[in-house]
Length: 309
Length: 327
Image (tube, rainbow over all chains, first blue to last red; front, side):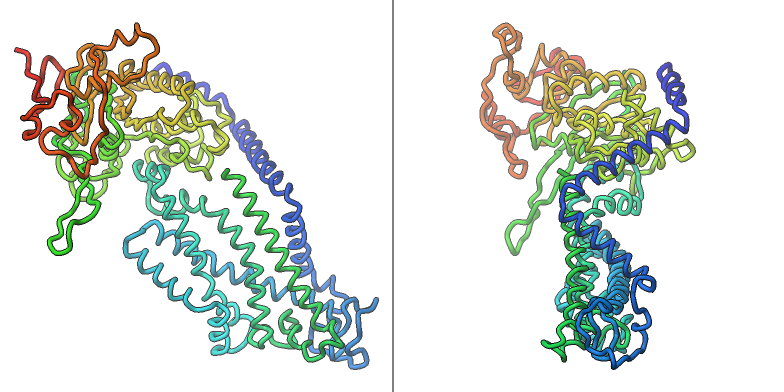
């Protein structure tokens, strides 16, 4: 009784401001530590810088692109197939459109594709993986994991090609096609983590104290899956952009005259090797963004590995 | 010390680990706990001692509600803990809490100390302010309030275990199961945690079911101790009584194997007995008395019949063919 009294008095000596300050300080400390670890690896900084740069290009394309009107139906045969110059840094294509402007706009399609596909795929894949993993050896496990096996048996690009060619070829259907092939990877990743965590004592402790299944899955297990999920998302952005560009390259993604990076590479191949810049710069743009996401993903992986160690 | 708070009656837990043969398949069972009857009194520290594989943790997990017994009952204040088929009601979960051996895995590493402590608070004290309840808990176990927003990996092993103890106390339980709470800790920290546990017991009037393999620790803190061997209890007596009058050959063997430094200490040990052999696999328990493979006094009867538990003298029980009740 005596202790109850004193501890209550001392606990109330901390004001709400004190607690808020504690929270702020701890948060700053945690972020500072994370940033320190992340920033020690120059490659991940380069990756992060590249991604920020590309995202800014995509967002502010109308203000950055030197010839925004070249993205719409436009021809200027007088200036067709110009090599790189001070007016057109990346040169012009076979009908006189500025390639730099179209590459900048092309990033919009690539990033939209990547973000949308991951926004569809990650929640679905993660929730299914959590449920299957938590109910390991029971029917949800069998149902979900055998379904993912079926989807994984088909190569993603081939399935995406099949779906995109059945439906009308455009960016939206390409995103649906890639999403259908991509969620099983997240299910598998989260499933393997969850099956390892469900027997950890912190899960048992919440069960013993009476926590609900949804609390255990989403508040106890999910936070432990976040770092591998983020790492995979970053690496996958690159992959999804490549698949999107591949679909565009074979004519099943972004349709001309819209400036998809894959579409631009495809249209330029007819003029190789003389007018190399028509294909080369969009291709280089793909390389830059994919490399950026991969470096960022590697950096995140190292960061999270160091955190656990 | 008079009213039993927890009563186990003929408690059994078998785990099926496989099947024999192909056509006439019979399950192969591990008899982790095989007919244990114990009583815990309110406010005491009851030590449950045994080697690895003796079934002591399985008993803890059944009391905590993680496993259902194969047969037998556990009563808490007269209520059957496994009545009905469903889960344990919340008001019983509130009364019985558990602290695990490994503090590294018993706290969620991706959630702050405050979030870890909030789990039982939100379930069992929905009307209370979580932050002030968390602060009170940290105060109770002598941890600074600044730990609230830290992550478990920023704490030492001992501090993590103290947080785990605080989490167990969050529901105001009356029975706390301590499953080897100090065996994963440095020796220097063990004493601190034990002292904290003893202080909390006095202040909050807790009953402890203390699972351990450290018999010498029990001498100092347990009011009564039960020795387990291969899923069965072989001796129950008061904590100090064990060291003065160990009756069961297995207890004598355990006491002999406590390491001591000086000859004076060695002389304090009641009976000398050289430990031999290893605990047999619980899949293949020998017939008769399960200790007959290692007992130096083994004779014919031990191979045939499993001895019954008898009260040798007041509050001292043992299960051995050699022993007879006084009076």
